[in-house]
Length: 163
Image (cartoon, rainbow, N blue to C red; front, side):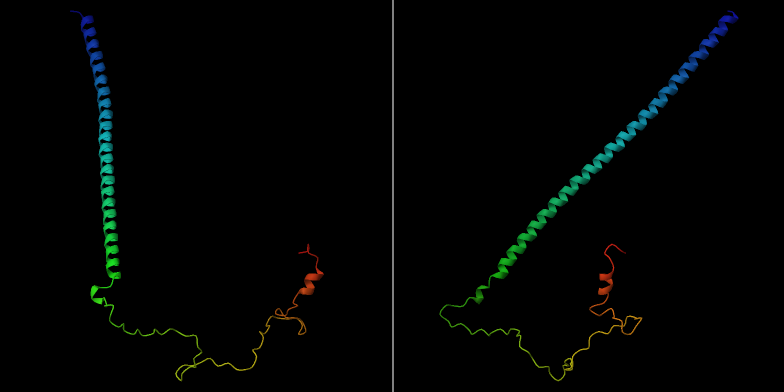
């Protein structure tokens, strides 16, 4: 065997090993991506199952709540009708005389004089004084802000467009 055959064998073996190495690495990366995708799919399936169980349990609880509400409402209706009817021991025979019922006292609108311990507001017979105008004035003869004619002449003298 010659050198050429040995070198060509080594080059062929080295190129074959390189091709196999990169082929296996590519398969490993594809396997990692497929594995990650499979894990995500399983996680999503588990999450979806949890959500379905949650809604199923919520629907059952709401149905139970509705049934309990209906039973409480029926109980209150029967109690109301039983409490509204007088007991049979209260039945009065028709031939007995009825007892006189006391007349209820109602509040009246009559004027009542205050008693000694109640105090009534004291008003004097004098007329109340009008409010005083404490706004500052330049001249004592000038009209105050509480006067009925205050600033009427100023508005009549100025044109409507002037500010």
